[in-house]
Image (cartoon, rainbow, N blue to C red; front, side):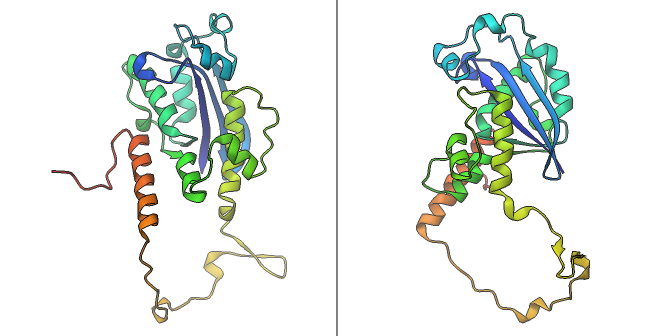
Length: 235
């Protein structure tokens, strides 16, 4: 399974208001192991950055002036992302900016290129309800060293996200079970079990759990750009 951990830095918070991407960072993982293959791009946004944004990422207008424009790197970016699962923290933000850049060029949105988009913010809210779930908060909670993160940087943050993701999904490391003798036992070697002998208890969700589930669905609806298929059509 090929995954790309993805992050952007931007001139501001709103692509609808004309804010643009100034940095893209991509880190590749295959079968839950980092490959060392990355893509790191600085971009000329063709507009001035906001003071608040520059304070966050440190990328000044002067530094970005001679960098390539998005149109010059779009094919390289899409080739790197093609068919992969793209993992993003707060995916709605980054996907919104990427789709705005693609729309300016008359290109199809990102979901037509990648295999799927996974939002680790949604995952974190499910795992740690009611807690801070920023990337910094997750690094602290999951003991990921982010001491070099004095400023936000797309490639650095994508790498940190990969480490956070591994720790969030550590129970999924392998489907192969170690045998006591030192060998391994695959799923096909396990004895058959008659599941009809088991009775599963039905546990009804509480009102709080239903509310938390609804909040997750709302986040997914936003991240998919209103293209969810799990909600019934509203008359």
